[in-house]
Amino acid sequence: MDDKTLTCDVLIVGGGPAGLSVASTLPDDVKTVIVHQDKAIGLPIRTSGGCWLSDIERLGIPEGMYNPLLTNEAFADDAHTVLPLQDAVPAILDTPRVYQWLASLSDQKDRTLLLDTKFITTRQRNDGLYESDIRVRDGALERVVSRYIVDGSGWHFAVLDALGLAQKPERLAIGTEYEYPIATNAPNRGLIFVGSKVPAGYGWAFATARDTLRVGVGVIQPDTDQSPRKLLDRVVNDEAYLARLGLELVGEPIVHSGILPSVPYDERLVFGHVIRVGDSANFATPTVGEGIRVSIEFGRLLGEKLGAAVKTGRDGPLKAYERACRRRMKRNYKWGFLVNTRAARYTPENWNASIRRMGKVGPEVVVATFRGEFPLHKVAKMSWSLWRALLRSRIRRLKTKLGLS
Ligand SMILES: Cc1cc2nc3c(=O)[nH]c(=O)nc-3n(C[C@H](O)[C@H](O)[C@H](O)COP(=O)(O)OP(=O)(O)OC[C@H]3O[C@@H](n4cnc5c(N)ncnc54)[C@H](O)[C@@H]3O)c2cc1C
Image (cartoon, rainbow, N blue to C red):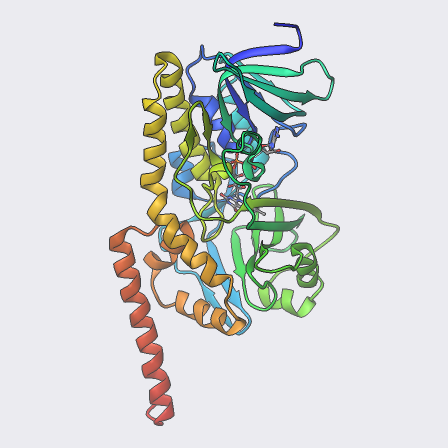
């Protein structure tokens, strides 16, 4: 082996929440290399960081790294509702800090973190090991030889694509976000907006833990060919609309943008010694594209199972990871994807009706939809709540027509 080659048990491609979480639960003596193409962990920001307080606590994310949202609203062209979320409190993660904390969880392990380093391609040698080409800015290393590779490269599908194991996603959610000083905006308020301002997508605004206000727009391409940046510019330059949303934008914003796959869940996660996790495994919820908590939770699980596979040489633990993901995601994401593709075709009138309904159907339905969780008993309850809301509005309309109210 020459001095341009690094050998290890596990190569992790991508230092996002998924890849970092895998590293954090691998046994201390499993030799791991993480290659991450950005110069720093968590920067530039490519995500909004929306999560839920209950998950933040469950995952052990330290205080001060998130901002709870105590008032949550939804706006359509002619409808507005305060979202009934009851005990479910959304919160915005300070993602650069959270991701750096995730990285610190494997600092004491036999781990090499290569920043500003890009995975280019890989091939399997006759001895079964993977030889991967990497590009490091200072040019010191050129190759990593490993027994296992984890694809945590997000929507890039870098490893899967290089080995021809899975198709790069063609349907993508693309988002742009502007970050302003908080100014007079409420420090614990969040909102979403839908309708004619954001065809085939939705917009959001919320206060962060860093005393800022972030306003963003995400659309699904190719469902629309509109650019999220142009749509967002239209929103932030429309004073009347901002006044309706109750937002004050001050100063020059910092711009963030990001991409995530918006395709059906694919239950195949393990390809021999190549395993996918996070966005490269379509883990973000199809309803609102929330992938951080899922990537952390199942990234940690993969780290444990992969550790067992490295130690025993058996593939069983990896299959257990695949099964656990399937149990959690397959059915939920099937329902979620139905909601996603339906909503992508919504007209402004459909959105008006949908936002009005959200105010009436009760917290269970709203929270389940936002979280992308549809167990059978909830689906039954949701159908009943939706029918009841629909029936009530029909009766109201009939009464008005008959002059009875
Ligand atoms: C606009 C937008 C808003 C979002 N909002 C939310 C939200 O509010 N809440 C939420 O939970 N989720 C949100 N998401 C989704 C969430 O960001 C992702 O689900 C999550 O980041 C997935 O983590 P990951 O580690 O799989 O991938 P990523 O976070 O994408 O990390 C993968 C990393 O791998 C690196 N990489 C890629 N290719 C290579 C390569 N060849 N070599 C080396 N490194 C490579 C990338 O630079 C990247 O940093 C949003 C996404 C977008 C785009």
